[in-house]
Image 1 (cartoon, helix red, strand yellow):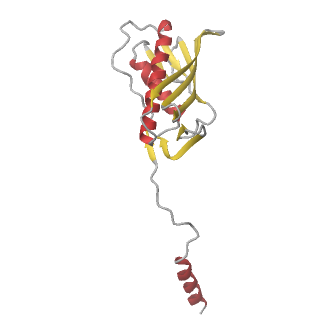
Image 2 (image 1 turned 120 degrees about the vertical axis):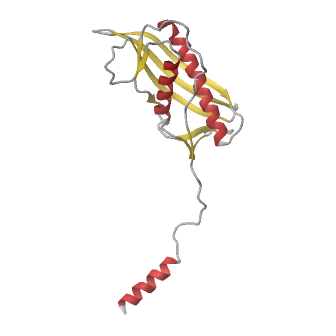
Image 3 (image 1 turned 60 degrees about the horizontal axis):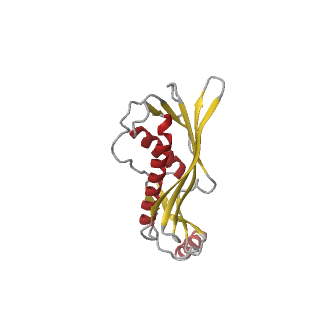
Length: 197
């Protein structure tokens, strides 16, 4: 008798749902991987560059695509996101971009046993699609150091902002524009580093 009551209650509960009936929304994921145009610096590289781990400004540790709506409010899309946290992906892109530039003998990561001549510290300060101005922006704050035995000399400190046109407000369009904006920022950074290579 007790078992029949439990089975009957389970059958009744199976037809009920406390969750609202919402359609499934697939999460879109985009790679943050700007590609450097082919062609090297055309000079003989002399220095080894260490690129330290890139920091993320507050709010940029999340993967969701960030946008500024036409009314000026900021939005983070949780159904459209980067494949990796933006600062991690931008750091990898930065290292690959500078290695492809052929301006350095090597571009290495922390933990290397190579003797390094220069050290680059960077922070991702912005990565956003601005619907008010129809442009995407990617911001970097960088410091280039020459490390000596007893002290480090600051060779360069700069805030860089790359911009790219925004074709529309769809996630794929916003992601493509932000990748292009990061590519513009990396190209400007490469030019700034050229005198120290």
